Amino acid sequence: MILKYHTRADPPSLSFGGQVGPWVIFLVENLFNVAQTSHFLQSFILSSCFFGYIKDTMKLLVVEDEPKLNKGLVLGLQNRGYAVDFAFDGEEGEKLARLNKYDVIILDVMMPKRDGFAVCRNLRKFNVNTPVLFLTAKDSLEDKIFGLDLGGDDYLVKPFSFEELVARIRTLMRRTSTVSNNVLELDEMKLDTSSQKLTINDKEIDLTLREYGLLEYLLRNKNVVVGREDILSHVWDRFFDSFSNVVDVHLKNLRKKLPKKYAKRIQTIWGKGYRLS
Image (cartoon, rainbow, N blue to C red; front, side):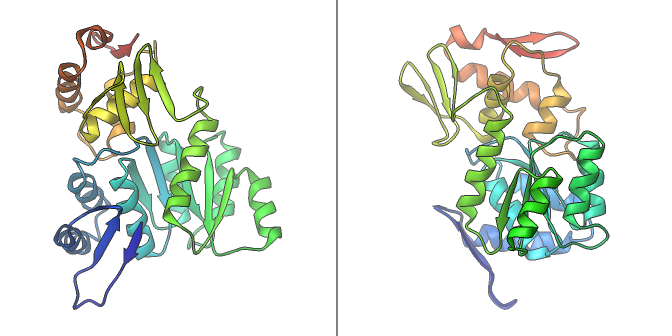
């Protein structure tokens, strides 16, 4: 990924390998600036603008005090299909990490109100065992050892490659998953989270971002009943309306795209949620 920020007179451009039109990023940039006092509006804008892209999915928290880097990380990870919450200081980041369930926390070290090391220490103290990836300019061996000994799981020094960050996120997710590689399987159904492809009997099936996210979450929780709010919190962001029927609508569309044999295996457990068996 290449992030390029221009002067205020020029529209920003953003490239992720698959090109996102500069006019889209210009629109996001301006909407984001208008909404900068509201995390609700920012998160809504980001999740809406990249609704149709199929990439990886799961729930991340980005805690970074530098506004442009925070925004660039959220945009890039949203474009990869992750549901992303974000904070600009350690105090807010710790609060979110303790209140919500995330798959990985990307945590800056030098931040106002509470530094990343203190945040990690407090999370482990309160038994929040979410993998933590430190993202920092502090590159000494002593700092790395200190952060990892506090309970951090990985340490990436700025400046860094966005592709390396995404690869490290996938690695951390594999460590906490029962899946040892990037392929989730159910009989002849194979979902490759690296190439972002779904195949059944070697035939590729196209999915939208949300359908992909739903299927991945169900495959990671095979034979487990997952509630609507659990799905919303992992496939969408924390601001999404939990009273809407968006999960039901996307599951209905997902079932239509799958062969009947597999569509029937996504069961609705009335009053509780859904189960892939």
